[in-house]
Length: 64
Image (tube, rainbow, N blue to C red):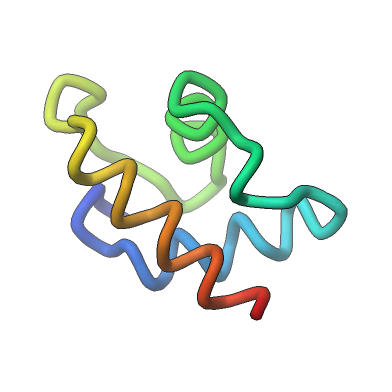
């Protein structure tokens, strides 16, 4: 899984952290949690604020 697969990342984050409100996750933790997902395999240097915002929004949409 790569940084651009925001929908799949959001689904996996929702499964991995069911009690977490995605609105309250800071980007440092979000990036760390994404990189810890078992299927994630991408370069951390390819991640930026826009990608993290997209992941966070997809996660919010996933749990809504």
